[in-house]
Image 1 (cartoon, rainbow, N blue to C red):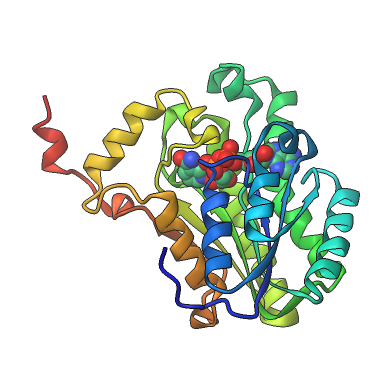
Image 2: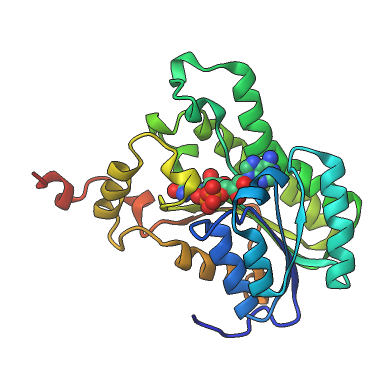
Length: 269
Ligand code: NAI
């Protein structure tokens, strides 16, 4: 694993490490390898069947349960993390997504709107809620960095991504809107990373994921970006080398988002 100690002395919270495949698991490992001290968090129910406790032991990180849809849980998480790390946070990662309609195979033209409400609450509003609690508790350090993970279906149509496309569009909008307020208050940066399809629990839940993964792999001149590559990119955005990057949606996709046609796909049998 590359180690340049880019995060030496920095403190952070990582949301969303469920198991070995989670993108957040790779990001947590890379942050610690780069010298950061972190706390890990996930929904209490996910902590029961995932492997976050093991990751916490490996990284010497306290694991604190919090349902990202519950403000009280987030306040408790931030209080405990401030105590565990001994000061305000230099970085926070939001790596949370879940769609009830997708899980239950409801199509986009026949969504259950109660479930859609829950999808937006978990996958998007949790980002605003988390930032609002950090802001009001004054828990971010001056010049800190907040990131959430997004997907290109926020800009272009990927029919099987269903309501998650709308959830990601809202997530990216929150990065811009809250980025203004956090920037003015404490020079804190807020960005989203639009990541390639990645084989994880949430990713594989999307209908036709494996076909789409291989389509994107062929379409992108560099191929799909892995979770390990995503972790390295996140480290640069948490580091002091990107102090003036804020309110952006940053593509981390091997070039996919700039492609129109790739002859490799046209000639595929
Ligand atoms: P994952 O399934 O490992 O991570 C999703 C996480 O959300 C899990 O840890 C889950 O426990 C957590 N979560 C769900 N409900 C929660 C709640 N109420 N409170 C707190 N946490 C909750 O899957 P993955 O792929 O690592 O997903 C992480 C992020 O990356 C998501 O935002 C996802 O949309 C995004 N992403 C994933 C891509 C992929 O192809 N896997 C591509 C682009 C973005």
